[in-house]
Image (cartoon, rainbow, N blue to C red; front, side, top):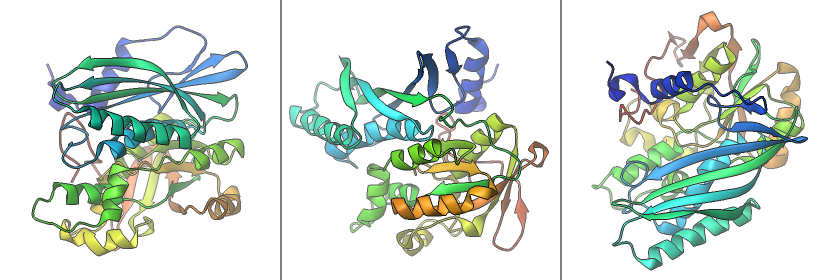
Length: 336
């Protein structure tokens, strides 16, 4: 019998999906996508949930409670963004150590409230409990229009593969947080890890204008989340390493931790950018949308037939079929 470490996080998810077969005809999308989708009258109801656990997803010594509150909601908002949906309400269940101060909790909820206000989302309930370590679980509810939601499945051979923003900043920021030797650390990179920006506006625009065929947010790493999209769409892809959008701050600091400057951008995770496919005929429209939002949107590859798998084209032209793709909770190691 396989252990969880042998099975891996995504292997476990596939097993759970095999054990549970929903029968409700109103269920449009269940396990396998960023968000569950249920038909609710003329609208679609969107539901997603994420858990943050102390010493697994965050260290209290690395962050302040205000930023932790913001991030707790942001990671859920990113899932709704990846479908082009509209976030509306959320519930929060929180396990609190007895030694935690009221000031900490107050600051946490202040960050949570500000993130909710920014995206016009209301807190409508939840639960609290005593816990050995701080545990935060949010369930976010949203809505979408029929025909105007974007799923992981739907990518077509010949599509361009796009990514928003820049990659690797959050993973590099985490390296600095872990580095006890370095006293003065680059705030910009650390903030990308502690306070990600969910791309709600971009996701909604892509959905409303029907520009994208398939989409996912990047939480586990570019290669890992690309593979999730490919599996659901039953296609392959080619990614050009030299096309990856990297920030000046990233280039300035990355060689401190990696001889291969693209590794963290490919496998690091927690960027919470949008990865999507779109037909070549809408390139001009996507360029215009990028300009109007003031957000870089970069074509990094193309969609191939399924039998060609996931290919990474290095700067020297060498083609690699990556095997270790990104972070897995049960393996406890990012891909190399």
